[in-house]
Image (cartoon, rainbow, N blue to C red; front, top):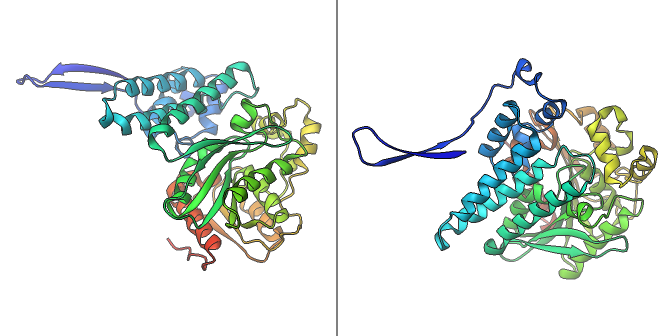
Length: 392
């Protein structure tokens, strides 16, 4: 984006034009000329998913346009982040505080998006993610509505963002992402929960986000211990307060596996998980590769063995926990048949599923309605109130 200043015809008043590449046609003919990575990025991260991870709509349009014009995904996202940071520098005094916060978060989201196609935890990728987290933290300082916290475990630290409840808290909740899409990417859900009186821990679990890229804490067979410590953190912070667990994508499978084993979990939401994560085949390409990378290994068999310990349908001491399954009717990754297997096999009778008929994976294309649905349900269950009616 660039700004041009001109004088309107017949007037001395300046006219400033903000230049953008703008939306470009994404026909097969056009995209076929791009690199394999660019084609994969455009396919894997449509506008709805990008905005679902916190990328501003205008930034998402511009990023895709730059890639269509031939720029690589990483540099296009990074340059757009730099544009946001220049606008941070130009925001005036106290009156510019909301502008600075907004553009710091936009820059952070763009940097997080820039590393999405990187399959290995290279020094460059780690540096990108550290910078994205720094910008997110800079935005949190003046906003005062969240703070970075560290949860110590026997296998390394967990990094999280604590979003305190507005007013008197009625409960606490852990929110996790999946194989890609991590704590900062789901902050809209944390904000929705906090607005309803739920202290929310946006957590990078083992193999995720800052926990992995900064502290090299990967998904291993001991992952349950780490999540237990995250629940300890909330329980020790507010003893006796009911706790919920929300998992997105493959994190939904993890959330259910945790909920069945920990009696402190009073309600659980699965948004896009599957009943047997270890059944994801290598033919799923980059997604399978990212599942392997989450385990900190190149050994596919070893990684599959780790994922076999994620058992969302297993019984446990907390069998019977309330469960909400959120499903997209047009999810290209998790079919309705798979969602039904998960629902029917869940070890509780207190369960139901809400389907967004045209929803994509994790229902990113209905983000606000999805967040409100999950937050309303979780608040009701942690408060001991009847579940809300699910209406249009």
